Length: 129
Image (cartoon, rainbow, N blue to C red):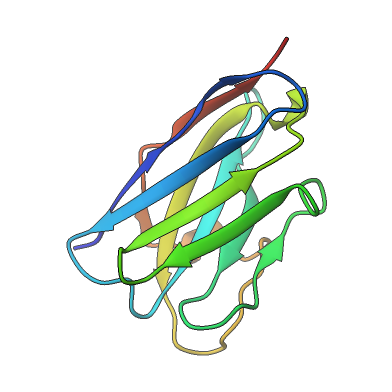
């Protein structure tokens, strides 16, 4: 059983940065694709970014392209989301999720949530002055 725990959320001013971490335990991340999702109050959860296990073919939501960077360390079983130039509209609970995937070696932020089998509990990010 794969367990995921997010950390790194908090309160930050507009224009600031945060790095979210997703720590996996229970098994290795081979061959899991990891996705970051977020849910703002009153809104549906949306895909933010994703990264397959052994490729660099990441994907980002248009709203975060150029500001967020996803990365992973398979040895440490960690996945990160570096968030720069944060905006108030980035305020949300951020979740990481994992899905077993060998092929294709790519992912999309619009892939259905139902494809992800494992979820963390979420970490709150608040962008406010």
